Image (cartoon, rainbow, N blue to C red; front, side, top):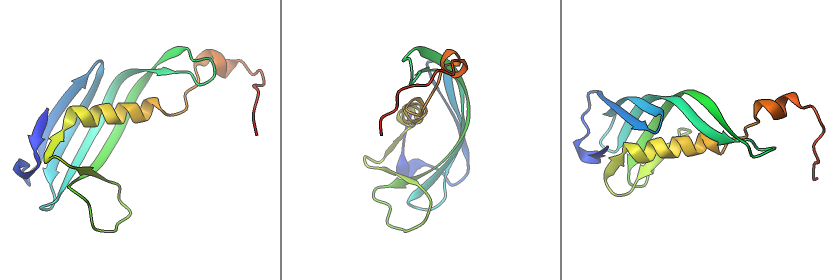
Length: 124
């Protein structure tokens, strides 16, 4: 689902994107002429690889996602993380994929490796 940045209203609008078995659902609205706020939840099941044995494992997602999107380069200096949109369109499918990729790149240990207390080789 794509929407042109300049057409986003100041009142909250609902959205829902489904990718495989994961739903990204919430609201979005413009909070200034150059910033859009997204408040959503990422819910479902996703496959991840165990970082010890590389076995595929399913994890249940129930993540709260709060984003700020900027139309172009964000110039204000704040502590908030702002995602910059370059082509003038907000692509909710791309945002969903990005959030999933971020979760999948985290450190994951499957149940078998977690129960196996065998010492693993470490490099220093």
